[in-house]
Length: 324
Image (cartoon, rainbow, N blue to C red; front, side, top):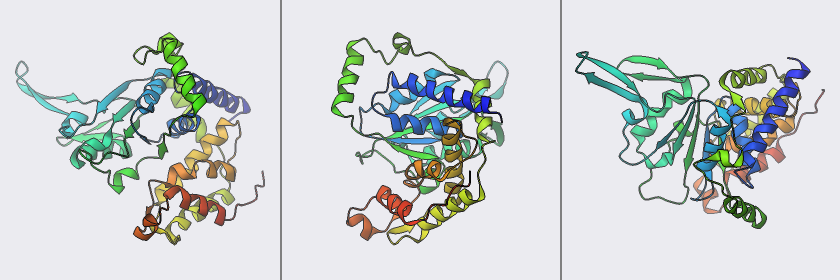
């Protein structure tokens, strides 16, 4: 990997961030998380109350990429075949043929994923982990790249189905969308007064910046970012600390270790660095851990949150000195 490749990656990352920021105001950290997951080949769960722009963010990302984009609106009556597709009988051919579902795409928006029952949520498990779909005994590969961006509303309980731990663990990040500040909300209103139309992003100059081949090449650059043994050890100690923390009932899995390394590599490349430093790991620790650890009931009653536990772990685990 050359310095020129890293500079190109950093410039493209920044260009995408700025482009999405034309539409999504005041959510820079969430945009960072989505872009990091994109280049790390990971999936994202985006959580926030209605009206904060979760779907808008995903659609804006899709607009900046010249990739296939499909959306599934999850509802209680959604069936697994509505996600994966299924076989139908073709009377003209006198045989069954497979009709692909919306999961056969490159950028998938699973909107309000917790509104569908477990059997429908499970239709995404194989797709997210193995990037393939098995239907009627046939295994079909999904297009490359493939990333799922799911949204959910944390405050509603009626008509919703909590995602099981096995599915949560398949998301690289869980991102939290917060209410905008006063100045950011003024910016949102100015955008709409200026004619922002969520159905036509071209009116604000949002156009594709990266095509499929370029995206795959940028993802390949991440694989060449160096991770020192000291950083690997730091990641392992962070993950193990989640399993022994006094407030945690269920700690993070080894998949969290992989996620931290992947996120650290992207952050390093976004800063045009060929190596990962501990700050790269710390930057996305909350996003990696918050949906992978289960707190003890007593800790929850005391009002402790997963993010507070992660912050405590980051303070307690010694940071290695970089030799780079």
